[in-house]
Length: 115
Length: 116
Image (tube, rainbow over all chains, first blue to last red; front, side, top):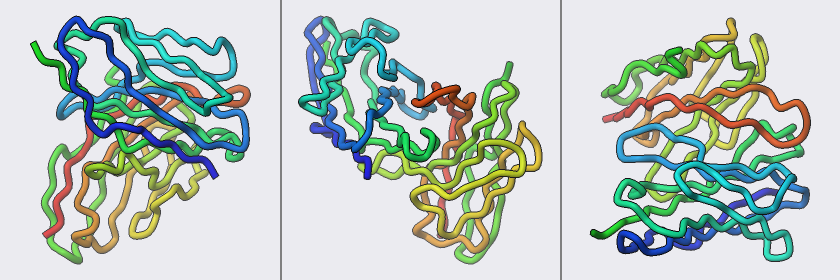
């Protein structure tokens, strides 16, 4: 069975400092992995996705993530946080045994950015 | 394009009442899905559809029905609302992947449902 664990429920950084949001997954197969962002009272927006091509994936707004199969991790990073990055972030894995039609969300990490 | 639209934005029900949450997309996506979002639990898949006339259960399907008569619409029905169904509901759509993985899902703005 697939599962996703986001290791921090809350992360607080100062503006201009690096961001690290951690995600570990469990999968018997080669998964597809995604990061979505949800700003307050909004829907979700895709930040980036990994689908078995390059292991370092670049997304929107300066975010990137590295797929590490040996560590079963897909951590999200950004070199310099901006106030507008304050939001909730979800790591998502799709289940290839269902053709990718069933997705599993992590519990989410809320990012706070201090001025 | 309007993208994915959901109605209503807010709804309050009494226990035992029924209602339908509406979802529509204008991107000609084959895949549509319904999620519920509860604090500390991320989003959980309720039902999904890979095309008109085809639906399947997700992780938490009990208490919900769906049908897909057109590509554009994917309504979610609560047959007899319970307080445990108080949640924020999101509809999403995407193209069906050609091979492996999954394409980006596009999400609607959500419906906040309270069951008293």
